[in-house]
Amino acid sequence: MTSADQNFNLNTRGKRPAFFASSETDALMTALLETMSQLWATRAQVNLLQKALIGKGLLTAEELENIQRSDNEKADEHQAMQNFFADAFRSMGVPTQSLASRKKEIDDLQGETKNEADP
Amino acid sequence: MPQPLKHSLYVKGTTEQQSKQDFVSGLRGFLLNDMAANMKECFESEVQPQMIRDQKKLETGEDVHDAIKSKNVFKFYSSMRYNAQEMVWRNALRAIHESKNELDSRINAIKNEQSASKLHLDPSLAIPKNVSSVDVHLAPGSYYREDGSANWVGGALYDHGLNIFSFGMMGSNLDDIGQSMAQYIRKKFPDFAPKTILDLGCTIGHNTCAWKITYPEAEVEGIDVAPACLRYGNARALDQGVDVNFKQMDASALSFENESVDVVFSSMFLHELSVKNIKRVLAEAYRVLRPGGLMLHMELPPNDSLEPYDAFYLDWDAYYNNEPFYKAFRDQDFTQLRIDAGFQKDKLIDFITPQYTYMDSETYTKAIKVDADIDENTGRLAEGIQWFGFGAWK
Ligand SMILES: C[S@@+](CC[C@H](N)C(=O)[O-])C[C@H]1O[C@@H](n2cnc3c(N)ncnc32)[C@H](O)[C@@H]1O
Image (cartoon, rainbow over all chains, first blue to last red; front, top):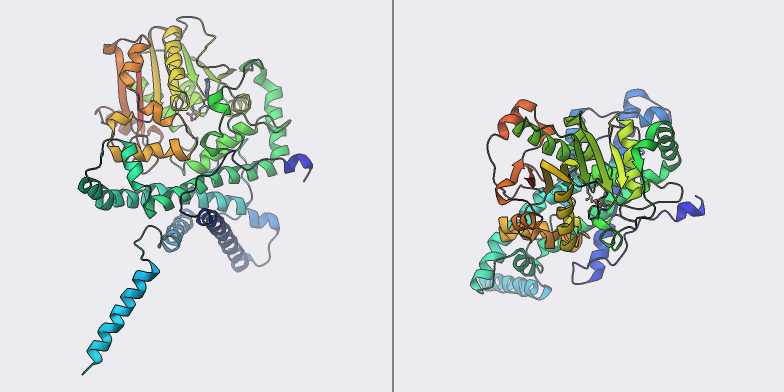
């Protein structure tokens, strides 16, 4: 890369909004989504390679770049992506409890079991 | 999913880059459909009943915004949408960056052949504050971004970014808005034969070209303040064989003669101006229109036509997507704005249109026979979207 290339700006001007109570969480969200995106891309690459290996044996880079997915395969991929989201985001926005309330719940349960066990 | 753009300036990117673009597009689809539905459900089942119990004011989008901010679902929705928006641009920029030299040669080749007479830049025109003070839509460098000799990067960024951003909902040539608006007018007013059509804030001319395609006899002009977009748009239109003139001009001070234009159009433009400037732009539109001419703006619907929740939902962009004027514009009385600009009340038009490029012409003609009302799908990029247009005849 030339120095001009290093100046090719990828960043938005200004401060990012903090949606969560701690800015660490906001930063983690960025890392999470980028990791998911990379994982998605890598997964797609692996699929492509597998297809190539199974179908034709060793390929040139150009052949590999030109592999096309059918509409059905694209639809499957799309569905897999939606499932991936459903898995990865399942804990977002659902009710949570504090550690103290959880402890109390467990303690209460234990208390009940104890009582049940009592003669 | 983003589709390959139908012109030779399209940067395909490597398969890895394409997968990342698919991911962002798919993520946006998930957020704007599924996650948005969860947020609405949270509002209806938790936030609203609580507001009623607490006797809190629930009249505007702001009331909803204040009450929902502390909910996890809002935090996650917002954080993911913000990140996804950054990822739209970053992914587009990485692909453009890698093909920069090749793209530069392609643009220059098109330019050398035929473009000079179709592109008029005005170096004395300063970039107005509404465009320069923030990176609009979080796009790094905004519309006017130039990277040394690659003085078209702002345009390429918009084209490729919009393609990822719209997850297939803006038409295969990103021109569904232009096509739907122009076709609506053509089909509803078959005797109207405009000779000159002007598109304000045309960016890269994707929707401007749609007017030339719909009215091939007309002279079509696209104006914008961002030279990077105009240069790119000029090459893009020539590459697609569409004859449109691009001019660097401020829409609030047009250099067109009085009564010299038949259609003054804009799409997704007014909401990027201050209210003061919107008034100037509408007055300019009135001035340059010939009697019998049409002013038409495709926009997001006004807040007073929306339920508080839906207003909050659209106003999200004002606060978190660097669209500072979005809300103030939509808070206006759209009727009064037009009357103040000189138009007569009985000559105003307001309509909703389905997406022309997603149906055959006959189905479209039937669909627009019925007058539709603004609803939660109006202007909202999600399944079932419809475009909103408002304007006036002079
Ligand atoms: C969201 S874009 C419009 C997009 C495009 N019309 C479409 O249909 O997708 C807003 C455009 O308005 C331009 N703009 C902003 N202020 C302007 C002004 N005062 N005069 C002309 N163009 C302006 C910006 O440079 C940008 O290209």
